[in-house]
Image (tube, rainbow, N blue to C red; front, side, top):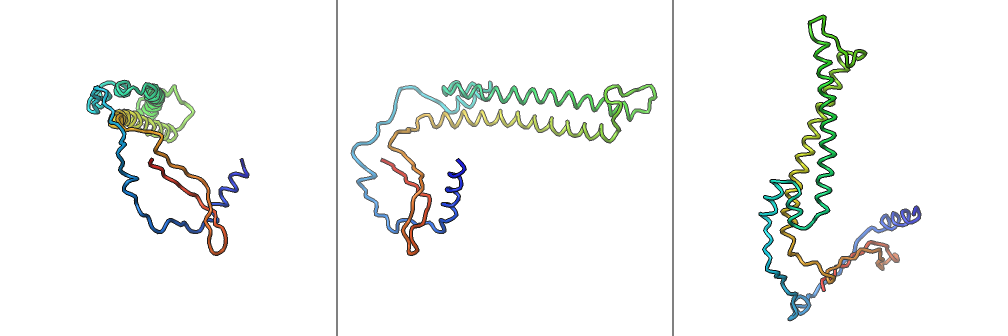
Length: 193
């Protein structure tokens, strides 16, 4: 594994130039032929608008509509994880806020039972940390909610996109002959038919 990384690094470091074909003469018959791919028409109307609205109302419902059931588990897993973190952080924030209020209170009968060994500056610092973390978790939940709506919409739009075996992109190491010898490089080949 280590040798493969070293060889790959050396190949990339030695490739000082990239070469391309000088002239491309497109063959119109290559791009347009009489045998065209059939358009899929199952009679089913799949609406991106419906998927978007369904995801906005109930998170994950648009993914169910798009028949991408595994994404629902990811969405709810992220939601539950962020929600649990939000609850724990919010509870800690309340505890530090209560301790800070007890420390700064002018009433001598009020005692800080939660964190009696911490100073006011440390309690204030911890409270600010948990407040910032809570706010970040709320933004994370909002981002998950927005991204699952966007995902449902994009997935519904791409439902009729045809992915067949005739489309291929191959990336592999290659070499180019030059005046100084062979120069190693990374080659890419795109096949459309």
